[in-house]
Image 1: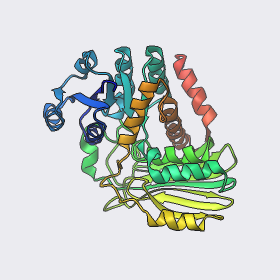
Image 2 (image 1 turned 30 degrees about the horizontal axis):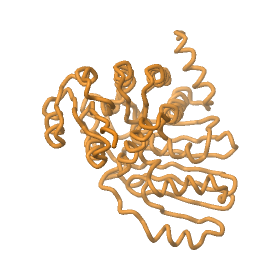
Image 3 (image 1 turned 120 degrees about the horizontal axis):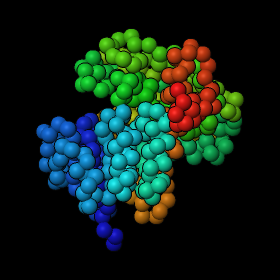
Length: 356
C-alpha cells in the first residue's frame, strides 16, 4: 500500500472542518498533519480535534517537508496568492470555490501549478452528489432531447453579523451573493447546459450593509440557443429557503434541490416512469448544512488524480468556468447591458498583458 498523502489546511473557519472530517474518513490514504490560521485559538481547536500541528503563519506550512497537499480554506481573495505559493513549494493544491476573484489570478494559479507539476483541485463538491451525477448522465444520454431552458435558484439568508467579520461581502476578499453563495449552482447550471454565450444581470444591496450584492438576477443565453435564469440572494428571512437547479428539455424536466443539491425534487422524463418512482423513493437525507457531504468525494478524487498523474474532475479550468460567469454578470450589472463571455475573456487578456 502506498504511503498516505499528507495534508495541511490553511484557514480554519466555517468550511475547514469539512475538509478535516473528510480526510479522517479517507485514512489511511490521507493524513492531516498541520493546520494554520491567523487566529491562534481557531487553529488550536481544529488541530486538537484532529491530531494535527497548529500554526499561525501559513508560510511555515508551505516550508514543511511532511506536507504533500494543501487545502486552502482562507478568504476568497487569498486563494490565488496562497495557491501559487503552495505550488512554488511543490505542494499539490486544493482550493475552495471560487478559484480566485479575477480571471487573471485564476490563470496565474493554473499556470503556477502546471509549471510546478502539481495537481490543482477546485472544490465544487455538489457535482459529486448522487442526484447531480444522475442528472449529468441523463443529459449526456440524450434522453431529455435538446435542452431548452435552465434555472439556478439560491434563496438563502445571512444575518448582518455574517458580513461584519472583515471580509465577507467585500470586493477585495469575497464578492456578494452570486460569487460566494450562488457559485455552486451557477457552476452546476453551466456544467449541465453547456457553454454560455452572453448574460444580462442586475444586482443590488437591499437588506445588508456591505459592499457587494445581497441579491442578483440574470438571464443567460447559451451557445446552443437555450436560455437560462439565475437568481441568488442572502436576504430570504428567516432562513435558507431554497437552493436548486432545474433543467428543461424537449422530452424531460428535472429539478434537483435539497439542502445542498442532494435531493431530486422533480424527474419527468419521457419513457422513464419507473426510474422516476425509484429516484423519488430513495431520497437522500438532507445534510446538516449547505456544504453537503461530498467534500470527501472531492478529496478522494484528488488523491486518485495525484496517484494516477491525471487532472482531477474539478480541476483549475473547471473552476475558472464558473468564475468567468460570475464576472460576466458583475460586468453586466456595471454596464447595465448584455455582456458576452468573449468580452470577459478579452478583458482578462488585456489585464494580463498589463493594459488597463
